[in-house]
Length: 347
Image (tube, rainbow, N blue to C red; front, side, top):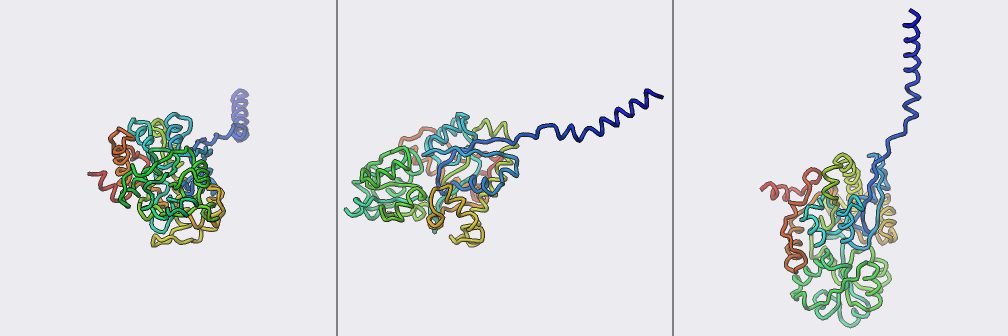
C-alpha cells in the first residue's frame, strides 16, 4: 500500500511539474529565409509583407539581400547562397531554369497602362541635340545594367515598334543602375532603359528626360517574378507555402493601395500606409513613389505569354541556347496562373 501511495504521489508531482517543463523548453526558431532583391519599386511583395508583419505571422524571418541587377540574383538562388529571388527575368535566369535549377513561384510587378515600371530616358546633352523620341535612338548609345535582361529586351521592343534594327544602336552594359544613371548624367551614354524608381529623382530635377514609358509598348503583368531553387521547392514545401501566404498578402495590399476596382491607377485607402514602406524600400520620397507606381497583380498570378516571347527574342539575339516554355519552369505546386495561361497550359 505504501509503495502504491508513493507512486501516486510521484505521478502527481510529475503532472504538476509538466507546465514548468514545457515553459523551460526553448521556443521553435522561426524559419529564416534570405531573399535576393533590388531597390526597385516593382519588387513590392516582400517589403510590404515584411513591414506589415505577414511573414512574422507565418513564423518566418525574412532577410532581404540587395543586388544591383537581376542576373546575380538568379545565380545566388541557383547556388544556394540565397533562398528566393525577386527580379526581372533574364536570359541567364531562363538558362538556369532550363537546366533544372530554378522554379517560378509568383509574379512581382509589370507594365500596364497608367502605371510606371520601366522608362526609356535621355540625358540632357542628347535631349538638347534632338534625342526626344524613341524614333530618334538610331546612332545613339543606350545604357543598361546587363546584356540579356528585361531592360535589353525592352530595347528590342522599341526597335520593333519604331522600325530600326538593333544594330542601329550601341547597347552599353554598365552592371548597376547607379552606374547607368551616372553615365547618363555625365553624358557618356545618350539614353538608358531603367526601372523608374532609381531614375525618378533625376527626372524630378529635370536632369534627364522621358522618351517613352514602357507601359505604352508592353502590357505584361509579370515583368518580374518571385522564384526559388528546385532543391528548396522540392524539400521545403511547408515553409514556401507559408511564405507565399504572406507574400500574396503583401501583393494584395500593394495592389489595393494603388489600383482602383476598375483596374485604373488610383490611390486607395491603403495608400497612406503603403507609400512610406515602398518609398523607403525604393529609396525615393513618398511623393516620387506615388507618381511612379508599377502595376502588381493582387494574387501574384503569372502570365506566361509575353515571357515566352521574351525567351524567343533572347534566342534570336544569340543570348541563350535553351529552348523552353515558361510553363515548364513554373512550379504548379505553388504558382497561380492567369486564366488564359491555365487554358494554354492545360492544352
